[in-house]
Length: 171
Length: 171
DNA sequence: GCTTGAATTGATATATTATAACATTCTAGA
DNA sequence: TCTAGAATGTTATAATATATCAATTCAAGC
Image 1 (cartoon, protein in one colour):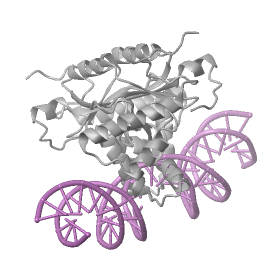
Image 2 (image 1 turned 30 degrees about the vertical axis):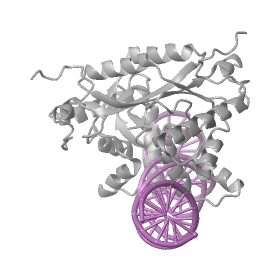
Image 3 (image 1 turned 180 degrees about the vertical axis):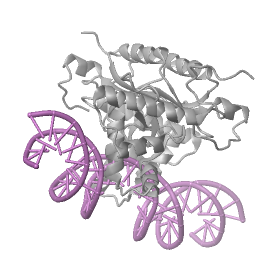
């Protein structure tokens, strides 16, 4: 069994998730400092909730967890915070899931392409030039100029393929 | 100015839309006959409403038009009918728009890739093997097995690019 | 420290999209 | 004609998202 490559976009079921979270916060803090943004308690909490797993989470689930954490909150609270985090590329919205996922490279402006495991729910983000090129060139044959490609792919992740889609929970 | 190629997936702003509608119905009738499905008044009406333009239409807008047409209807009526039409590939759902669009090749089981013009709202459907291949192969590098790729691309269509995004209404 | 304006958050209401559950009607075939 | 299954009607509600205005907090300059 080969280990997970360094640059593998898809989190292994047995990876060190605490490290993911720590790195996500480090990146966020750096980004906020650089851009003069405020990393408020609310934003920090929402980001933390989103990074509790590699599964997309819905706005109302985020809301519930905020309340569990003792914070007064309404839907607007969550949506506003999500909008802010998305503007700064710390979070992406998966339109096919009505749910939100953390992004591990907020520095670069991008939309990303997402692999969503049907069984375990884990999401991996790609940034593949070949996919984008194929879309742009195909679109161009009909004169269409691409601005915002949405690519969200459901299927089975490496680990769930091995389990033949039996599935099991994990971070 | 070159004319629109025969197989162009993107409808020209000045195309003969009556012909689109007629052909859509011909295809639907053929499909229903072949598969022993019932092309009821309701299904026919919904299909007709959807084909009134090449722009995606929301379920509640369909509902309104059904009512305008003198039909009693509730949201369920529309959603059930949409589900049926989607099962039979006569209609696709655009997840990024929460809206529905007619499909001109229901014979083949497929998901399609969509070009959505930000300005005029018109949608063109692609079936490009290269895009799918790029997605599958990239996914495979991380062991991910693709089942249902969602590709929805917003941008500017040929006509709106020429107008520099000024836009104007049409079928 | 104080003031002030902008950013952030709170709070209330409502819009939009979609599904659940059960009743009734229609239709094709025995 | 009868009947079973398909289709539609009906009512209620869930799930997702936005609009609006008020209150609070924060950072910068005085």
